[in-house]
Image 1 (tube, one colour):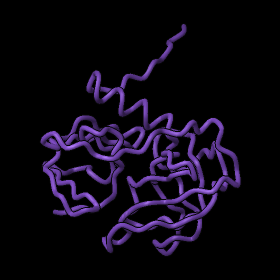
Image 2 (cartoon, one colour):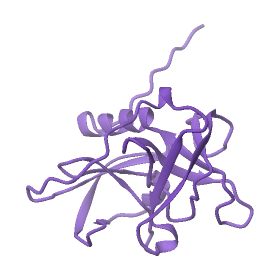
Image 3 (cartoon, rainbow, N blue to C red):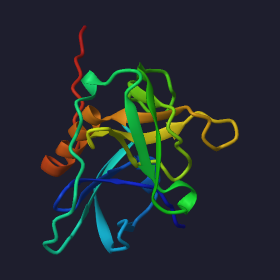
Length: 185
């Protein structure tokens, strides 16, 4: 069974982040870049609770372009953003919009309860793709849409860059994402 989604190059040495639901259930992974180069990929970390997955490709020494992480704590409603992805498998597509809400909770997507909401068109296949600000920084990873029809209704959700960075760093350093907890009696 094949699955198709989007991803974001966050490490020039071939580190890619996408959504866990894009890769869930797969045992082999293939990454196709916008210039049509193809690479087999290794799963470094899959975290169902944040709906993020980290992949690594062997670039054979080639340096890939990356997106720097934005400080989304400074993101405001009304900030212009671009949603980049591969909707419906038609190829790389860019749509524009704004951040419609910050700190959106109770979306029902994952245990992570803090999403950015955008009105940029996000459709099936955009999952795992970049939400980028006007500085060219990664604001978030497109994760879900609210839709009765299955298409974009102008309500898309992205995992903020701070959480994406934490998961990627954990995957590249420890290989696991550790959640602190405190038990009191």
